[in-house]
Image (tube, rainbow, N blue to C red):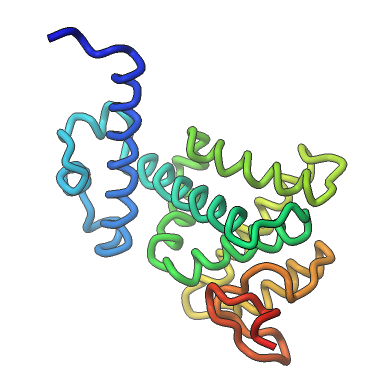
Length: 216
């Protein structure tokens, strides 16, 4: 049997890594961070335990990469959903809604992710985070930003702050209020995007996957 080519080996490594990331998201969402072990993750992914350490220095780094992958895939799906739009304002609205939607739909996972960022390990800038950053930077460029290098960190901070506010134990803020504030800041009409099951301040609720235009 001839040896596998470098491209085949690279593809196998990519798939193995993605299985580990997907397994991490599933298990932490189901059981919580402390109850999920690296052995559990490897078992769910159908991988050898040693592969986890090969790809990631620790569980916190693995979790951040896994959540960044989830955010990247969710954001990409939101931006490319039908009817596809090249309008920068619509795409920015979809981006905001996609991130807020994750806070609503995956509260345990996103709360654990935010807690990890605030701990000693800090912010992991791996390939998954870079893909997420690319999408957000591209969205800002299409929106009309004249200085993406300055505007991207601000948008990232605002989105992280909104997610934190949604998930704050004992004192969560309404998603609709946070969405309205973000939309006002960027001059976006409420009818843009796909509101994540939130209620427009003074208005009616819009369910996930339903545009507020169709709810009128």
